[in-house]
Length: 134
Image (cartoon, rainbow, N blue to C red):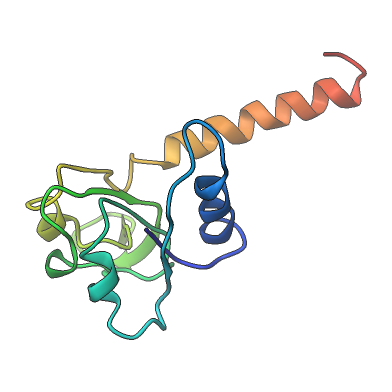
């Protein structure tokens, strides 16, 4: 299940997951912050990928026991205990959901480093193509 309908994460991810090929071929349900009774859908998911763009979108009561939860969201919230005055959190209520999930990605430090790695990889690939190299 994908929570989020952005053109950058939600829609492309859902399309990648439904491809008819090895490592894909999933049945994907897509919800968003405007979905009524979202918890009815999220509680059915074995894999829950959340990219809603809103902190605390998914809470512990919305997740099936043993689900794998991937939090793609990055939200800056005020935190006067931090020198910067803010901290980063995801779209998933980590403390609640981590008690039910068999695996969960943290924010920060979860998908962010892979995103940066792939951005650099694709930049190098593009530069090589532009230079006429393989």
